Image (cartoon, rainbow, N blue to C red):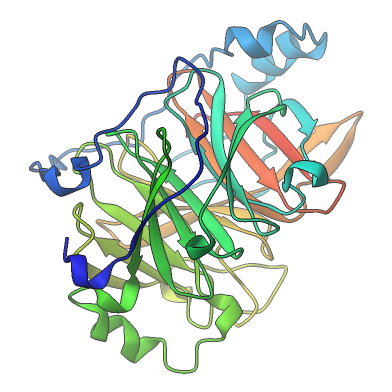
Length: 347
């Protein structure tokens, strides 16, 4: 990475749980791109979701029933039934203003068992959020990070990528002792002019919103929230924007709730199938986007409770734990902010 385009800052000491993987401060420079095998790829997910021991201890009576219902969800053919309900495993209140977590945003699996990474618009902090909704350690970031943090993505080397929306930057955080942070402006990347042409007139509050990483290749995916909606494919070493892909109506980004100008993308997760799970706040949907065919199908963010269909409001973060068959959705709804845990549907 070009040191002239980034600022490195060291901050105060924080300690991760002992299970958290520490990272080499130079690891980001040594990323290796592997050949991606894509022939004959299918969208395959675990057939029998297994909830983690951490969740099992809650002993909710409806848990077994939810697993049974998941096995008979009415998915048919290759199309996704937009009106099919997700099966809720649990949900937890997460807002904690005292810890600077009053406006939850991004979500990603972490290297620490039983924890997710998350950020908040409220303060420049990186948070470990338990899969039971309980906040773990919070890591104060240098002022360079700013307070408008959006997406978050964990990497194999232990580093964590964050998005700064107003500065249009990727932040590389090494949650070690001491904290280290590197700022990478999107405008500094090779290939940015192709994105800039499409972003003329893009509102300041419609910038980078979601980020995820393909762990096999190291490629980084970033979504621009709207006006226009874009997917940026960034090289593993964060030096080049390799592709700029519009997420338009022709690709399947359509909602019955809002018109095209209002439809946004608010979160992003990578699946082992090669499909990107792209969250929409205004659409209250998950778009399953295939980068190869450049087409998307949609799942409505609804579930049944006490015989009524409920809608997940203000979804901002999404994470997949495919080993356990779990889908996590984080909402930004003031004191009503929640972490939802669903079974990953069999598609």
